[in-house]
Image 1: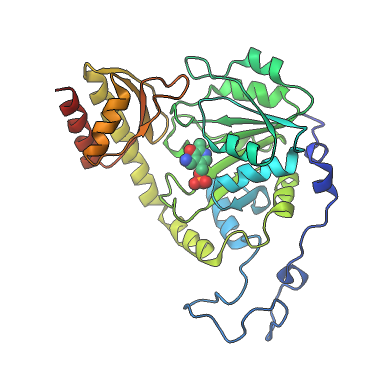
Image 2: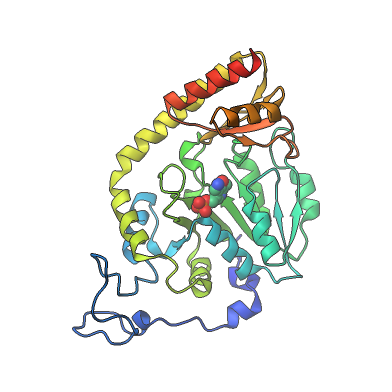
Length: 351
Ligand code: PMP
């Protein structure tokens, strides 16, 4: 990857466009009177400076995230969920109707939705029955219009991590952008690819506040990449994509690392407990190994069981009609009490 230049992969219109320039970029600093952004000078009905536009680049928040992740702020993009980063990747790199991207189904659904929204052809290379990447088929699918490869690891809905060697093989050989979606990395036995960012200028990592951080409603996702790529994210994003409330609340949440770590530890403990309990029952065919905060299980009469659980007020995800997930349910790990209720309900279905 010595002479990789991300700019050469960027759509020409994006490379050449002039980004919107905010009032706060044209003047940033101390002043007594700000009359440059058509804000309401009288104040805000809320007890904070909500009448003023927020920092378009969320620097304070990025610095705090960066200190936890060991990354400088210029290697971080923040979006309205990682879903925003996924969409921006298509908009930055893929020429509608011409370029293509690759995914490995069964996987997270938004790659497909964003590709379709942006009129980008998506090549689907099914995971093997061990839920790993078929590197030979991948190699034959890549062409000179392939801009993005999405690797979800740990993968949703299968729960497993993609073999590290496969990811490295792709990073080393693919002359496009390799997106590794680490939404569930906190629950994984595998380590993050963060340490590989400096070595691979074609790597984009996605993480989120929606899972281990317990902030799905805040809508805050992260992309980590080379500064060249982050600068393109900043060029294309809406100027004030992260509101002040989100920035302030995320800063507060970041002070609670130890609580988050404890919840993560308990989730993993519960996952192993539930996996073992489910495995013990005769109606479970397979509990797939999970590095995430959910289990994929293959079980007799999956769809009927799903329906029975709904009637009992317990909602899991029916994946029984997804290719390679036939007869499977995806179960998010709950609290100990919730997991016990679930297990009892499943047992009563078969009793
Ligand atoms: N990636 C994966 C693999 C996910 O499962 C999800 C959410 N289910 C996301 C990304 C999106 O997360 P966010 O809430 O940050 O948009």
